[in-house]
Image 1 (cartoon, helix red, strand yellow):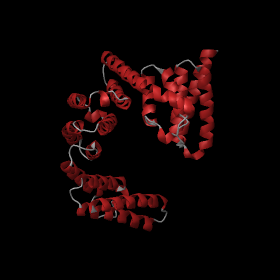
Image 2: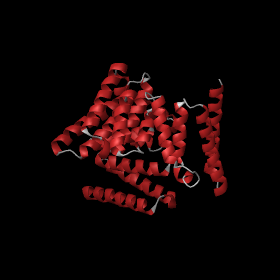
Image 3: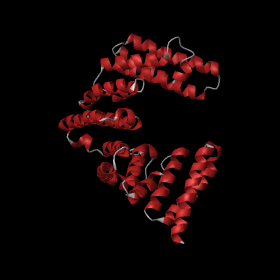
Image 4: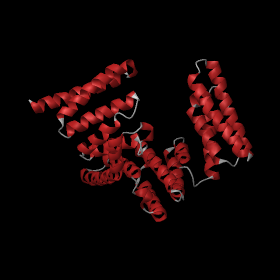
Length: 337
């Protein structure tokens, strides 16, 4: 089918051009290559106007490079992206919650709420449980990031209705999946921040229960990986999800379990910023669990990692790490002396 061939060729071009853009040092060549990429996307979108995925990808590219494109285009790339996302929703309203979330970031809080109020029930009614779970996890993470403007009693009602729809359609496959439980726990933790003491305590008890359910679901896989070792690219659930789980456990007073998770995943990434974050969380978890010897060892290793990272770690972040590392050591010394 010609449409399939054209789209396959386009996506290969996008992938190749993305690599070239990352390596391009000449501004004129960079701008030319970027405009060529956008032009190809626009042409294929125009050729196949009923393809929602194409519009999603076009909008994503426009937003990703909006700063560079603005002086090169006669129209506002953000406005064009919003138009394509809106048209994609009209074409395929029941798939891909990311387009709802992406468009919501471009709208006022009231308009964003209205869009999500419309989109969440449609996504929840999806037939593929994996797609539904992925979309709902993305939604919960987005709500955490925009909690103050979007999470209202009405939004919680919309989420409750969505969960009822998902449960009726897919049973426990989505709502009891460890990753969904962690994302929900993360949102509830944010919710507890603005509650009175009694309500916040009840919310955190719910968070603790969700985290325990999630860890129970993941425990066999984690144990198997600890025994056999595993490549970071193959980690399921994801490193990010496990880091979130560890943070939730620490909030819920389960530092020992958190330390177990962190001690395993700290070596699964080569990204210096992520490694430092994980090391600091691990040192804190060991300290909170009363394991002062391991807390000292991790702080020492973290100091060595900061030295090796050199200027890659901004001075402000480095100073914050060093101050917190010194605080942990001082508190250990005070307890042991």
